[in-house]
Length: 196
Image: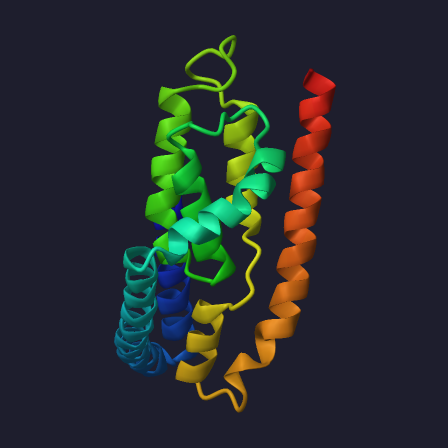
């Protein structure tokens, strides 16, 4: 679907540029945007390498495991059907920690592994294999709403495009993601209670 949307936008831009006699501006804009995209990718690669490296150092030092243990009561409350020894729990905790730090790219592998483990060892036995369990739905909502204490990606974008104070978005991001995560969790809890 996105391919059709992007193709449509490009065709409209070219047709409009020809119709208004600004096709040169369209070409120049495409080249300039390509240059900015490469610069942004290089900036994001640096930021991503820094934070993924810090996550790896934290994992090697045992900090991630300590955070997982600290988060056990929260995970138990969020996912009451997932037993403490379930293979998905470490991946869920890693995903939550990475999202809190605004590291969506680091959270994704852990999130995929958590979903795989939840699907392999379902927590609701009566659920058919093609239907998501309550734990899977809650995890997906939690991941999408993504409570962030440090919105690293947004700060990097703002820095790349010359914002005067790139970190000014920290407080608004905390407020917005807290509200979205809170509403998502309440909705999941409500739906789960209605089902049981």
